[in-house]
Image (cartoon, rainbow, N blue to C red):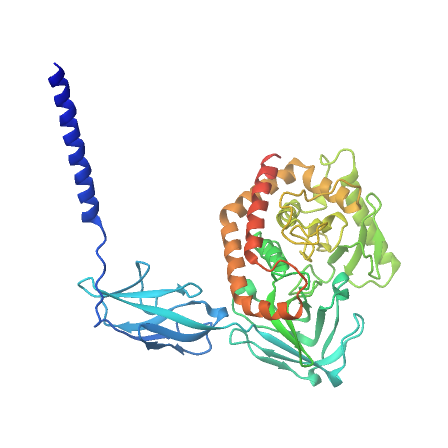
Length: 508
C-alpha cells in the first residue's frame, strides 16, 4: 500500500517537470527574433510640401545622411504631413503604417521611420529637427522714442509684425495713426507693463485661418504682460474652457514676443479689448456691457440696492444721469428678485440667462478664480430687450490657487466662495448654488465637458507649452519672480481640481 501511494506522487512529479519544460520551450519559441537590417533599403527624399501643409509658407526639404533625416522647423508647425520616397515595401512608425503625402505626424516626439522590405528586413531612419522657437513678434516704435508711461494718454507708434510664417507680416506706419498706451489696474503697477493698442481702422493684427485662434478685425487690442503668470497659460486656459463650453464673446489669446523701442520685453498675450462692437461683445448699438469691479473707477457707475455691488457701465458711453438711472433701475429690479424670500421660485430667470450662470460657474470653479467674491473683473452683457448674461471671461492672474497664497496651483480643493459677507460672495453664491434649475444645468454641462473636452484641454496645454517654450525661457531671463513655470504642475492641479469638482457637483 505504501508503494502504491508513492507511485502516483512520482508520476505527478514527472508530469510537473514535463509541463514546466514545455512552457519553457514554448517561451523560447515565441521570443521575438531580432529584425535583420537590409542595407539596400533607402529613404530617398523627405519633404514637407506646402500643398499638403497649408500652414507652411514654402516647402521644407530635409537632408538625409547616415540614417538620419535632418531639417529645420518652427515650433508652430509640429504637426505635419511628410512626403517621402523609398524603395521599401512598407514604412512604419511604432508599427503604425505611414503613407507618403497622407499620414500626419506629431514631430514633438522622437520619431523613427522603419523601412521594411518584402522579406521583413528593416532599416531605421531617425528624424532630427532643429526647432525655431521664435513666436510671432510685435515691434512697437513710438514717435520720437517716447516712453509709454500713462494709462490715459496714447503715444503715436509704428507697429511692425513679424508673423514667423504662421501669421501675415504687417506694418502700420506712423502715418496710419497706430497708438499705444498703458492699461490695467494692479497689473499696471508691476515692472512688466501691459499695453493697449488703438488703430485708426478695423484691422486684424495677426491673421490666422484657424477658427479657434482667429482674431477678428477691430480697432482696439490688448497686450497682456503675464507678469504674474509663470506658465503663460492662466488666461489662455480659462478662455479655452469658455470656448469649449461655447460661451459667447469669449476672447482668444495669441502668444507673441514684444520689442518696444528696441528693448525686448518677453512674452505677451495678444487679445481682444472687451467692448461692445460687432466683432467683440456683439449685443447691438443699444446693448449693455456691465463690469462688477471693486476698483469702481469708471465714469458711470452705481452701487446696487440689495447687495451693494459695484456696478460700472463699460458700454455704451452715457451722456446723462437719466440714462444711468434707467440702467440702475433695471438692474435693481433683477437683483431684488435674487434677494427675495421666494427666490428661486419667482421669475428671476426672466431677467438673466440660466445657461450663462451655469457655464460661468464651471469656468470659475475649475480655475478657482476667487475674484468673483470681491467682485473684480466680472462682466455681464445684455442685448436691448434681452436678458442679462454672464461674461465675457476676464482676468485669471489671481486664479488657480493664487488667492491667499501668492503661488499658483495650490489648494486644489478650496471652495470657490468665501464664508464672509463680501458683496460678490453673497450675491453669486446665491445666484449659482441656490436654484435646483441652475444646479441641474451645472451638472449637465460639467458632465459634457469632462466627457468630451477635458482631454482636448490637456492636449491644448501641452501644445501651447511646446510652442512657447523658447520664448518662455527668454522671458524668464528678464522677469524671474519665483512663479511656477512648469506646465506639468498646472496639469496635475487641474486633474486634482476636476476630482474635487466631481465630488462637489455630484453632491447637489
